[in-house]
Length: 604
Image (cartoon, rainbow, N blue to C red; front, side):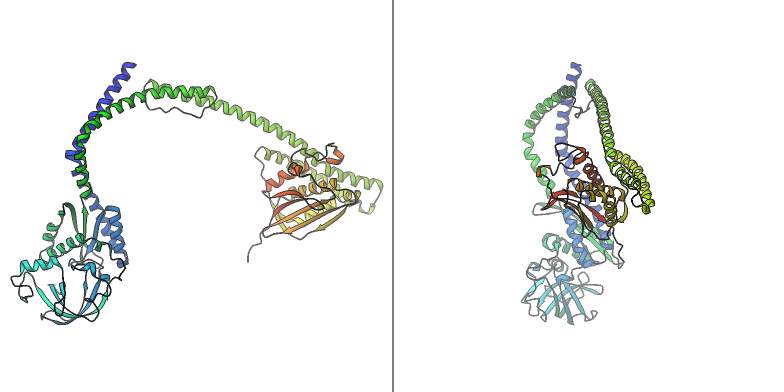
């Protein structure tokens, strides 16, 4: 086993070091720069195809072309724009002037109004609203290149030639192709068909003093390459212009890659996608790697030490983790699992320990769940028996009262009424037992409360009628203030709560005092209040009255304090409804209250 691990360590360390050396050397000297340029060109070309599709599909071009150019630069670090068939930047009317031609020096050119974009002129940086040279109404002289029926201006001057702006690329081509001196009007030259136009500025479309110009206009080199492409396109054919410009270009010791793609716009005219990206990052990276090459030997030696340490620790660390995990298992902590990263004996041992931990954890959890279920079932049984015995007391008292009345022969004319009342109470006891069974189910997590709509004031009145004899027996006065309001709740359960609260009030109200029952209507709910007067609950006991079997009297005598289940059952019923409830001392006694949701009336 030791020989195998040592051999594995030796082979992996040696192979890793050799791989690092080969990768650095080959990548630095041969592969990286070519790979970077190739991938850069490939990605930019693919992105230019998408850009062309997006441009053709744009409806509002004047608003969207600038955004497309800026987003393309942000995503690909590449300047891009769209040129028309004459090499002019598309949608450049926002930075232009409108000139009405007054006189021409060529018979084939009819007088008309032309738009002159200003980005191609050398002083474009200073062009803003209020420029004296470009003020509306100024007379100017235009020297332009004729292409078919179109004229592409490349020199504009004041009428006295005091100020002259020129497109340096087209002006340079003029000097190269025309034998005449600058300003010559030899219009028979076929290589450079130039003409002079005289006109007046009728409109200026220029940026304000502090207004930002179009994004591509901020790169003077990009504009210069556009001018160069336009010059070759106008004086040569498309293939020659593309071959001249598309490729690698160097300016100020920085290399750039240029792209020209011919497209057809929505109007069916020829257009060009012109793009330029810098290759400076790869050149800087290569120079930095070359300067750093002297330190690579030291780096590799340190790497060998680190790699040897890493693999040694990698083999020993699983054993340490196994030791830690087995200690936790002895403490019944099964939360940790061993990572299985190898297929050797250590990996098999880790897998077996994980399976052992899962098996033990599963058995212990099942045992704990069984114990908890048994405890919960036992508590449910006890609570069910106590609750049923308590809740059967009230209907039995009602039946007993009716039987006493019938036995004494009092109110014989209401004999049928009392028999009907006893029959209703027997049915109610039957329903009560069924619902108590459901309540016991809820204690085990299965009870579901069924809701319906009913008048809460009617339920309160019926509850008061049931307990009228008990109220009269203690000579208590009952003050009721109700309103006809429909609520959404379980009618039987809410009636049980009201009876419990009134019984509680009767039990703790001294003779001769009063019980006050009222309702407060709110926006989406109604508040039911039952107040007994004459006594208060100590503040330390307010929160305890809802506990099972809790009573305020120390004697815990049934006749005075009850079994202590009524308020606990009422609490559970109100919690099932998801409503607020509570009890607090008032000036005259103790107020018990709860809220119920009002029935929503459909809007007309």
